[in-house]
Length: 161
Ligand code: HEM
Image 1 (cartoon, rainbow, N blue to C red):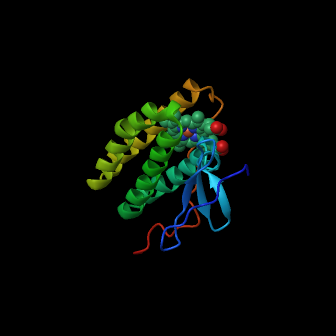
Image 2: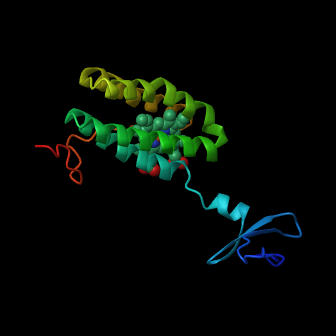
Image 3: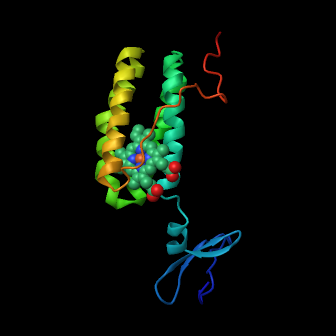
């Protein structure tokens, strides 16, 4: 890394940041010094986030189908958290990602709260159509999420059985 000025330590010796001569903020980690710019670069981009969204969307569907509403809500919350990370890290998508949470995920959450499978399935499918529209909008019209035909094998969907 460039010529970072030495990290100034607090009395407790735990201080973790300083300003470089060219005004870059430097964070001291246990592995060495990193600039905020480097840390920002190292955050997951949309491809990484979306891969996880797709996987959790799959689990979400089959959890709800098995009437495992707690697992369904958990997966949906994680999907929403991924959307929020995307909205923060990629300002280009902020408005659409936040809008998507309201338009598609809130109704899904409501269906889960009501434990209403039909309502859930309808909202879930609208979500897939919505994702196709946004992928198209941003030049990724070749990406279409397809719900896998089989439930995920790594979760016990019906633990009470
Ligand atoms: C339930 C909704 C959605 C699902 C299930 C979904 C799923 C996916 C999947 C599986 C990928 C491919 C990831 C990979 O293999 O690398 C992808 C890519 C992408 N999605 Fe979504 N998506 C959804 C909604 C959205 C929305 C609302 C936006 C934008 C507002 C969006 C923007 C993108 C972009 C930009 C990429 C390409 C990322 C890249 O390669 O840089 N998606 N999505």
